[in-house]
Every structure is written in C-alpha cells, then in structure tokens.
Image (cartoon, rainbow over all chains, first blue to last red; front, side):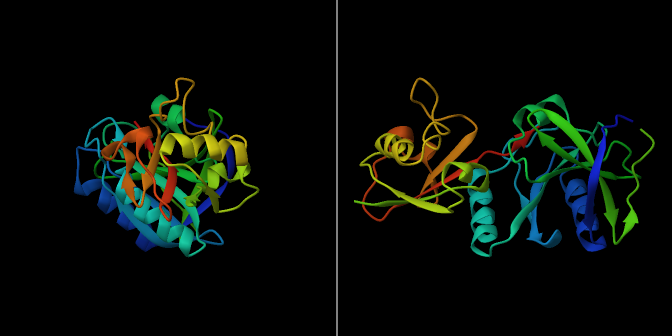
Length: 149
Length: 91
C-alpha cells in the first residue's frame, strides 16, 4: 500500500460512506466521480456527477452537472468538502494524473478503490502544488478500513 | 453593459474574496481582457499565451458551456452571467 504523510482527518457519516461505495459499484468497471458539500466539516449533501469520459482509467466531471452542483453549494454558502472518484483496478492512492490535474487545494480528494471488490477502500488526500498528504478517514468516528494493498 | 461573473473559490484570491465581480465586453475575449484589468490574475487564469481558453477551465454563459457556444468568441449581452469553474478530472 502506498502511503503519504498523515495530515489531519476527514469525517464521513455511514450513510455517505455507503453511498460512495454504492456509486462506485454502480458503473463498475468504469470510474465514477462526484462532490461532497457541507459546513463545519460535516457533509450535508452528496452530488454524484456523471463521468463524461466513462473510462476505466480516467474521469472528467460533466461540466454542466458540475456547474449546477457548484451553484447550489455556493448559493447555500456551503464548502466544497471533498471531490471523489473511484479506482476500479488500482489502490486508493492518487495517480500521477490525479496529482497533475488537482486544483482544488481546499478540498479533500477521496478515492474509492474497488481493487478488491469484496473490500472497498476509501482514502482521503490533500493535493497541493503536486504534494500529496493523507487525511485519516473516519466513519461515524471509527477508523475506515484502509485495505491490505 | 455589465456582465456578472461568478468566481470559484480557488480564484477568489484575485477578487479579494468576492464571489461575483462585474466586467464588460461584447465577447468573452473582451470580457477576459476587462477581467484581467479589474482583477489582476483572474483573466490570465482563463486563457493561455495564445489567447485561447485553457483546456481545464470550464467557462459558462448563462449556464451553457462556451465550448458549445462560440468558445472565446461567444457574444455577450448586458445582463449575461458568466461562470468560471476549473475542471475536475483525473485518472
């Protein structure tokens, strides 16, 4: 398992965690993506966004769906807490493409890995100026499984 | 002639934290020039040295992606809203 320096934590509630896994499974083997928004670090809404690339190795959020989500987030004065996508065949760690294209330094990049379909893994990262740091992901206050690989 | 421009959080460092700014232009290209004049760095974040829109920046006029309108030459009229959103993509 590839690791990065742990820097802080990211809290998810069980319902959101399960929804992310369900979304990732819903279009397997293609990657899915979406946004989590909220306030004070608490997730208030999950926005699944269509992957315009519909690829097994790449995602690109559908621009219009992303705009509608963003406008709602901004109009409600919420924060964009997390940007998530799935890896269907690799571990839950940012790929070089993920790092290269990461521009939302304030958001946590969550990756849902279905590398082991029976044991989904969600890990969270900050990606700022090409540097990856990991957020300790907790679900209802308990450590989320990080998988064996 | 005034266009409302919605600025994403990651570009608000160019607008003193403001969510929206006003600018003028009869095309998106003119608007970008005016944006840069009023908010140094904001116009430059949208276009490359050759004056074309960056591939990984989404720009919308009244919620329509300008890639499906006229790109950088998309005409603007008084009261239009232009939204800017860095694309989210990865592997």
